[in-house]
Length: 227
Length: 260
Image (cartoon, rainbow over all chains, first blue to last red; front, top):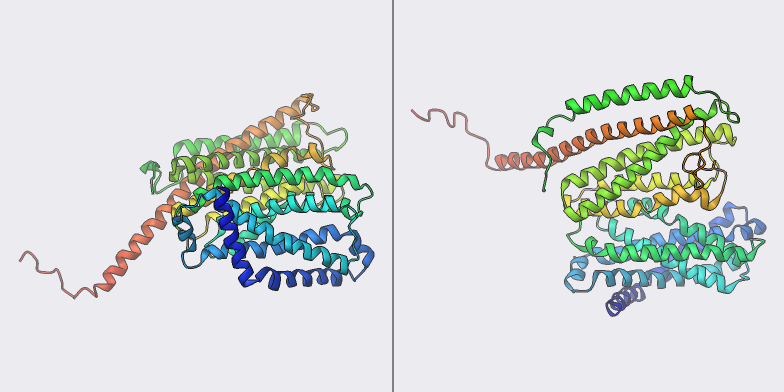
């Protein structure tokens, strides 16, 4: 199964390396969003620093929506989904591979965004380990939920509106946990150790949705697309 | 489409049993209204404001029941693959959205007089709103244009995933300990802190709301079945009309004189 997952992840990452949509299109949009936050909050560095974790993760969520749409579209054209089924790969491996590719893309995006908030909001990281662990677990949760809901809404005419409607409420625990953990890591919370308990929530969400996605992806792949 | 729905349901969504059930629900609601507004006394702290509890609490409980049944029916659909379970899941989720909306609205009204604002970032209120949106998404997904099997399977999986949120909502008041009043009846220490008549009225309201749920479920189920019938028969009729049109107009007098 892990070999199949690696194949699918490599396929999605190869598509991304050739098209460079995440780095050349989604990342610049993320930078513009950060700048818009600056305009919206009157470029008050004090306020921006204080709310950096929240702005950072809201931007990640919005960009994740774009990346998930891209991941779903990769299977939506020219019967690619049917070809994937015909390939004989384990559906659970397909889910894990697609989620892993999304994790890799989002981590690149998040690293760029960290530089962005450091530049625009003058935010400084005080707990690198906490940022890494919370960021990784939060991203795994986002990617699992996104891959699952992406497959559920894929191929439908209302995908652009249905995906955010299902995805955003489901990732609320990720946003809650990741923001609280980053508040500890950025020092905007007076008690830095308060960030670590939220990592547990992120871990639970990541494990639960990865397990659910692994189980549900097989039945989802069966049958044709609605379109 | 595999349909175990009896033929007698076709053509109407009412029957003798649903009429009796509807009458029981109306009488029950009248009784709860009398007990809630007139027979029970004022609360020591919240005065008359607490009376909204007789609608708010059963609505919230019923919403959990609806989403629980939706998840169960969704799981059964994935196992049995019958229209019956798909319709049960869809009907229960729609009613759940209705009662979650009612719980939210009454909770916000109560919040206005108790907290001083319609909306506070209380964990249970926030997650109830999120649950409302999630199941609104589920109901929207059920309406996507797709073959029955594809739509029903995706809806079933969405329903199962969505219901993971329900226990988080119910127990969040204990996990996060925010503004929301702590549980009064379902307390971990089983020490129920409520007056006898108030508790009776609340439990009666809970029972009446569930009778109302069963009545709504039967009607929504039958309506869903009829909608599916219209959809499939409507398509057959459209195909027949198109085929007749392709064959060209029937000549005047065609068929006359046969048998002569």
